[in-house]
Amino acid sequence: MLRGRRAARPRAGSTFARDTTSRPAPSLKSIALRLLARRDFGREELAERLRARGGEDSDIAATLDELAALGFVSDIRTAETLVASRRGAFGRRAIAQALKDRRIEPDVAAAALEPLAGVDETGDALVLWQRRFGTPPRDQREKARHVRFLMARGYPMGVALKVLRLAGAAVDEAEHDGS
View 1 (spheres, rainbow, N blue to C red):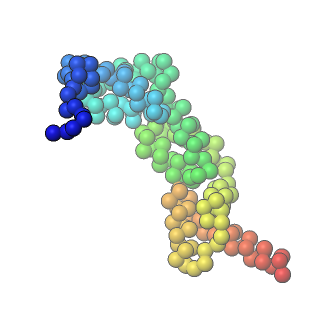
View 2: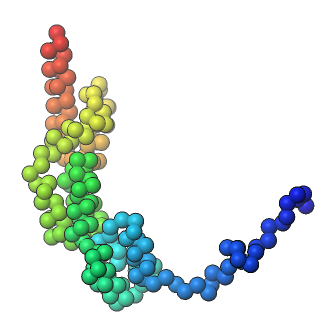
View 3: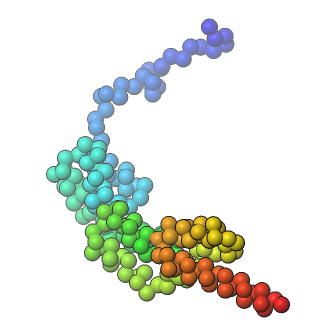
């Protein structure tokens, strides 16, 4: 027996004594709004989440139509937000894959990726590489690690190798100027 303490008993108004079975199930709209409060979802991705929570297809379609009319669900806004947030940290290929993973329509994804069409990926990759590593690789093992890092961020192999050549040339030039 515990001394100086009472045995824990649920009080009438406490969370322990509540009967959770009498609470009605949340509506699809409230579930969707809770999900949308965390981040933007595309229509198909949100529909998939609602299906996983037991929603019927006709109810889901009606709920998504209502939320789209209110401006809460927009594939265009979702795609533009994703592109803007990943620009500079990921290559075009990785951003396109993220849009595909979020089930954004291909024509909407293409429109969102349009601003990246004229961007020099080598320059972006070089800035990213400098922020991460800063110094050229000392050996082949380290070079492979640098290349894998850039490729995991969605940059092609050619861009990754070009970044390492540019970084090596910059170091050689700095050493030559210092002599």
